[in-house]
Structure formats: C-alpha cells, structure tokens
Amino acid sequence: MEKIFEKVNEQFNFELESGYIYLAMSNYLKRLGMDGFAHFMDKQAHEEYEHARKLYNFLVEVDYPVEYKEIPKPEKNYEDIADVFKKAYAHEQEVTRRIRDIYKDAHGELNFEVMGLLDWFIKEQIEEEDNFRGIVEKFERINGNWGGLYIFDHELGQR
Image (cartoon, rainbow, N blue to C red):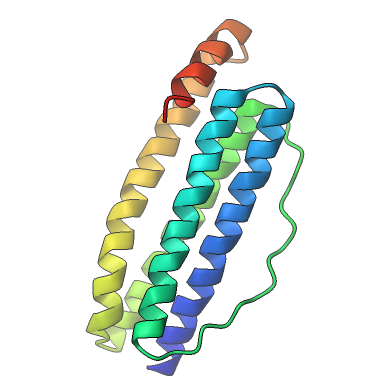
C-alpha cells in the first residue's frame, strides 16, 4: 500500500512541475506579444495546480505524509510558437502515461481508493490530449502564417 501512495505523491509533484512548465511557456509566449496563447497557458498552469491539489487532498485523507520534491527548471526558449504547443502535447501524453502506470499498480494491489481517484484523472487526460492534439493540428494548418497566428491567438485567449 505504501508504494502506491508514494507513486501518487510523485504524481502530485509532477502536477506541480507541469504547472511550472506551463507558466514558463506562458512567459515565452507573452514575450512574443502573443497574449492569447499566454493566457491559454496561464489557465493550463492553474488547472495543473488544481490537479495537484486533488492528489494532495487524497494523500492527506489517507494519512500519507506529503513529500515535496525539487522542481526542475523549465525550458524557456522554443523554436517557435507551434513548438510550445507540440511540447505541451507531448507533456500531456507523459502525464497520461504516468497516470495509467499508477492505475495499473493500484489495480494489481486492489487499491480501490487510488483507482477511484484516478478514474477522474484518466477522463481528464482524454480531454487534455484531445485538446492539445487539435491545437497542434491547427498550428500545422496555419504553417507559420502570421495572420492565422493572430486569429488563433485571439481564439485561444477566449479560454
């Protein structure tokens, strides 16, 4: 049982790291004057911190001592705007892989509490990956056209 709670704690820290990554992406986009894209990433960071809080609350409820780990320094430069979102999509795929790994272990241990917690995260990751996949596809269609980028910047700023 201890091992599975340790993995949940690791995911808690990874969700915090995810928020940190998205804030760094937001800063990069803001420096380019793409306020809509930056706003989107700010919202994404906030969402990651909410995910961390869900994990934190669960660990507190099961009386597992939450351990905070060092957060690595995020990347601050990218090839271009599309690269930011491609990396965000790849990051979400990594989050999904980690959640599934924890779920698999919880299933093996018949830890229904962790499985119940992760049911929500699995559904959330389907939505996250679908969202970023669609964004990356739009960037591919825009193909660096500044007119398209400004329109898309405005669209994502509506989030």
